[in-house]
Length: 397
Image (cartoon, rainbow, N blue to C red; front, side, top):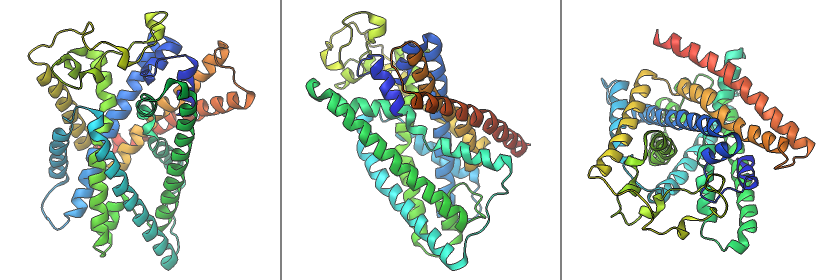
């Protein structure tokens, strides 16, 4: 993530530049297309995982409701996601994501504490078989945990946009320190949770630790924890859908973008981005400098309907995939092995390319680190995809 942001600055892209813009500046149309394909696969995959995870947790919370199939829960969750997917602006989601973080931290702490209690009482069990498939399933899941790489640049844009230009460099350094601290904290939490829960609950097979605890533990608190996790994931669903829909809008034209509806008070948020590497000298301007009456096509009567229908269609497809692959762990592994490694290694590819072109000179240790990231990502992508697809075919047959 830090490499991606540094490459963006080395390329002197405007603040509103996206991951796709960085790919275009580094490798032309092929780079943009590659990033778009990876972002859309990853983010739509994450949405599929979220639907299946919520359905799994809901089934565990309502385990007293006998006779209800997993299909029913998946369809129910898809219906709820259809509704919340119509939230239009990212800034409408800040309170949802803030509350979701609090709920998720509560669930993580509760699960880890229970794992330590179980290890203290009964000792740790032996988990996987140690086979190559288990190793790559684990690595794919670890890569999946960093799916936030697709939204780190919009977060940086929000962090930097309204600051005094004279303090931009200091704000940039502050953001990088904050990002490093946040990702280090997340890594420690994930490693602790995985190590303790893997040792304490070796028989888990649902792909959701909170659903497992709600099913197997008589303490009612774990029903609450499972519900908190379900609500937290649901609250962040629209945020995961945003990057994927941006790619869809770019592929199929701007007719579905809210900026086409000029009566919208927040339409300026959706004005076209101006890329300095496409528009020539002097084009590096911010959104606040653009005239709201700029050359934006007039609205058409069905723009809101078109925008909503594309989002609803995307959620329905995600729900259909979740129905077809009724296994959270397998979905995570599949998405983590195909989408995440590509997005993880692209910044390193770009960084090495910029070094070769003498745009951003790297010390030897950073070159070695970038090469290592590329090789590891390629290994996980190829082997992880092979084992995940093999397991998927076996499940479906």
